[in-house]
Every structure is written in C-alpha cells, then in structure tokens.
Image (cartoon, rainbow, N blue to C red; front, side, top):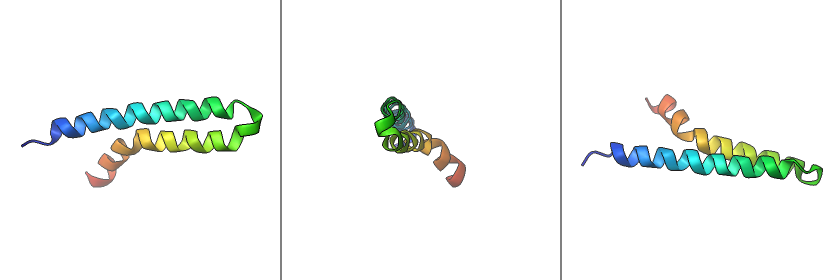
Length: 60
C-alpha cells in the first residue's frame, strides 16, 4: 500500500489546524491582557502548520 495519499491528507490537516490555532492566538494577542499567551499560541500554531514542510526539509 502506498502511504502517499495518507501523508498528503495529514499534511493538509496539520496546515489547516495550525492556521486556525495561529489565528486564534493572534486574535487573543490583540488584547493587551493576553499578549504573551496569545503570541505563544500563535507561534505554536505556526510551527504546527509548518511542521510537514520542515519535516520534509530535514528528512528528505
């Protein structure tokens, strides 16, 4: 069985989920009370969205 379609689906899942987390963190960082937690959540979302590409760069 070829795992390429599964990896492609997982890549899209990580990208969409990471972008949603990043947008949630940025909207949370909009308020001055939650500036640093929002930035950390946005950074974690960005890393989640970029993880398939970064994995491809490191492994391939």
